[in-house]
Length: 507
Ligand SMILES: [Zn+2]
Image 1 (spheres, rainbow, N blue to C red):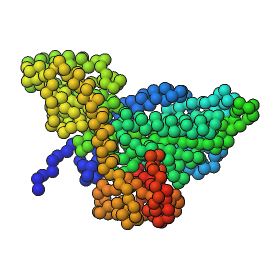
Image 2: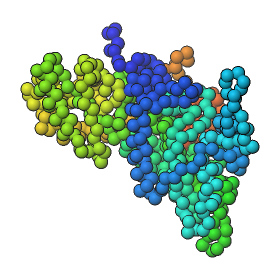
Image 3: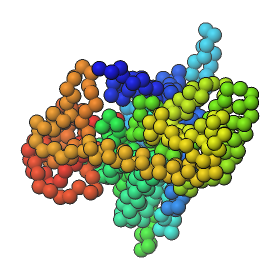
Image 4: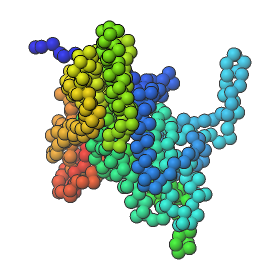
């Protein structure tokens, strides 16, 4: 057997996917664990990805009539208690502020003092605190629809955390809207789900399945929760965004009432919807390889690394002159409406070290310029979505055009690869034995990558849902919008079922 080819990330995906994920983040310098338990430090390369997510999504929110605002991080306990299901869903993971100051403890340290008469909850989501404002803002049908978005941090106390996927504090956006009618609120809920799906596909190059959550998986307090689900390269699902139709539950809890067109007072209809820094986890796991991060160009913080290569002073001058002029040529260029950013990397490191640095960071293109390239008036261009040794010689006069076209092509190729992967790992399964076999690893000690999306019949009963979850750690990810009515038998109990749902292991 030939020796395994060395990869920049060890272990590889196949060897240990969970550890590979951590190592990709470390190698790309995206984030690190904070000394504050369960919290992360997002480093510049990771934060720049989040800023791009914010920027593009924010434009889409604005185009659909939403406006940004900001509400308090603290929620009085009494607000939180107003919606029973909501309390039950979040109570176990709330950070609670009980004191307002620190005092000398007489032993050289400090102790909390000034106990609050009413504790504050650090927001785990903002329906109740935003509802309190909306109750004041909404008086008449003329005030509706009210379309608000907030970019904020959130705290949900987590016992087991993982960078970007599950942390005690994370960043997100939460949209909150108020409507005159049920139909209008439902339209809004589905419109925002469409925006998330479009954003995931067009910018993150992640194909997603739109659907509805089961009763057991929906947002605490919502009437219906809709989601987009994506497949990661370990064939698990990652819920990448949710949109909730809240009915009149929160309007009643917060007393959001308005005078309708008939002059009568009634409760309004509300929605909420959100995506978070989890999307960065999705990006990493959907596209990266055993050499590190792979970024779809439209979301990458920077697009092209220019790497000058020279041995002595004489070569240095000529190579740097060309490198600088190429770097300059990319100023004010764009592809797919996205501004191009470059990195001229002249650090005192070998060309191989600089090359691998950018490969691990997932920069889409690398442009190498050496003395021979100067002589032939060309450069070498390498793509991150191809093998690390694959390069192509490109004439200097066409390098800008070539790179811009390649960035567009890469965006599509990365989406295409993710789509092919999902299709190859999505199967219709009938019968309990086949279903259990699909989700059971061959090696139980060190489970190999297994499973995928199973399109199977489900009776709709929570008992079957819970049994499958307990036996296999598999859940109904969603009832997909595009599933055709079809007669079948529940994969768990054999009772009649009307349609297939998506089962998978998930993050
Ligand atoms: Zn059943």
